[in-house]
Amino acid sequence: MRFRFVISRTFKGLFANSAMALSVALVTFVSLLFVGAAVLLQTQIGSMKDDWYDKVEVSAFLCPVDAISAQCASGEASEEQIAAIREYLETDEMQEYVESYAFETKAEAYERFQERMEGTSWAQVLTEEQMQASFRIKLKDPTEYEVVAEALSGRSGVDTVVDQRAQLEPIFNVLNKLTLAAGALAAVMILTALLLMPTTIRLSAMSRRNETEIMRYVGASNFFIELPFILEGVLSALLGAVLAVAGLYVVVEQFIQKWFTNEWLRPISSADVLRISPALIVGAAVVAALASWVTLRRYARV
Image (cartoon, rainbow, N blue to C red; front, side, top):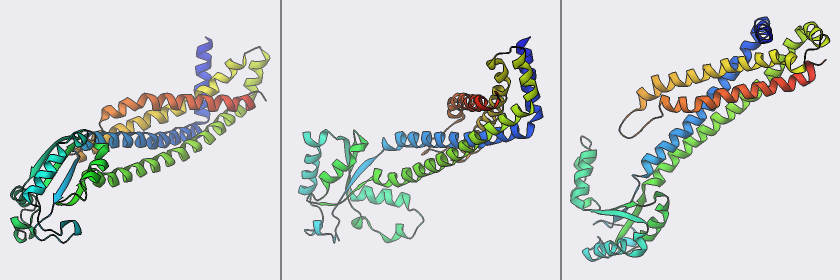
């Protein structure tokens, strides 16, 4: 009976202040949408790092025929220099970092270049002699790419050393900045929700002050008096949280999965949304309950 009474007073308050309750739900929806987007974006970055860093190679390009750099003053890399580099890669010092390596000849480099640039003017201009032989080195730990790159730079016969991770870092930096932007917007919206919730609860409490006084007069406990107001805030926030989860699910399932699925990118899935949804929903309920309770400490006892 008491539970039914609490529920009836809760929904009575929601209908009486439906506009404010809807405002709380919408602000919560937008807030958690940004929070969820930031978490999912960071999940995507982590997935990309796991996939791409495993494929990171350090490429040591050898001096070509027409080299103009200072380290290639003696001309094209000789067989002796190539053999010395191979021996160096097989030393105990380098085996600590190198998982495997492959030597790509000028002919192989030319063939791969023709495949990639097929149909372009570059494919017709460059010749096999102009290509650079190289060592393609796969690392045991991709984070150690700088050590290997520095060890090979400046060695006799080596023109330039290129590490693929350095090319990927700017992409991840941009994505991290987008995560921070989404997080900042989420923080602003959460602050807005925290300011709006107390206002909603205060208006509801003030509109039913007479009922509250009567309940207190007949001996109702503070918890029993405050519970309907707390539930109003929680239900409004839960509605916003469910909408946010549904919105993220639709975006990921209908857009991200269809637009970005290919052989080089494994995008986030609806399973990732479902994985974070309990935290979003529970977090919204807890924050709303605490905000409502703090507000009632002041207004429900007036």
